[in-house]
Structure formats: C-alpha cells, structure tokens
Length: 148
Image (tube, rainbow, N blue to C red; front, top):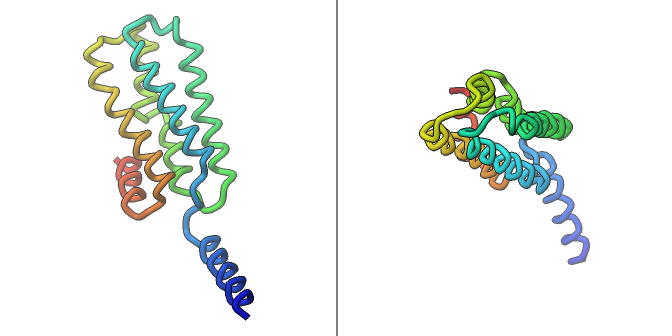
C-alpha cells in the first residue's frame, strides 16, 4: 500500500513539474550562456586592437548567438530565454552595436571597453541566473532588460 502511495505521489509530482509555465533547468543552456559570455568579454578585452585581427572571433560570437537561439526555440515553455537570445541577435542590441562600432572604427579606446564590459557581463549574468533559478524575480529582471 505504501509503495502505491509513493508511486502515485511521484507521478503526481512529475506531472506538476511538467505542467509548469517555464522549462526546467538545462545544463547545456547554462554552460553555453557562460561560454558565450566569455567569448563576448574576450572580444571586448581586445577591442583596443584592430578589428580585422579578431574578425573571425566576432563572427564566431554571432554564430554562437544564432545557434543558441535555434536551440532555445526548439524547447517548449521557453519564451523568455528565446526572447533574450533574440535580443542579443538584434542589430539594435548593445552587443551587436559594439561589434559594428568596432568594425567601423577599427579600434576602440581602452576607456570605452572598460565602461562597456560591465554592461555585457550584466546581460549574461541575468541570463545565467534565470536559467538556474527560473523564478519570478530572475524572470522580471530579464524582462526589464529586454524591454529597455
């Protein structure tokens, strides 16, 4: 009898979790978010050098963002994360504007990169936090960023 109760409780709990409004934690999404953050920060760190010397890395970053958007779209109940990767892919996003400005100017000042780095870190930190927490507060912070 206890075994039947335990089985039913486990089944019921599983069904509740599956019906939640957001997808569950995804280790791949989390690690790729951190790797994409590292690639973006790495590019910011060398933006006082000639863009052409780092063009392949800049293109790889854009490709990584495209890949993650495709991956996240394939998951169900994942609208917020999809919106975030769409935000990063958008030409009006600060990260895309940074890459465009660097390409146009050839090099950026050390002061610019020092001021810009915390902005990019914040974007990816919010994304990573949301992936691990999936709570109302992390969702709200992420939505606030997307709708700025």
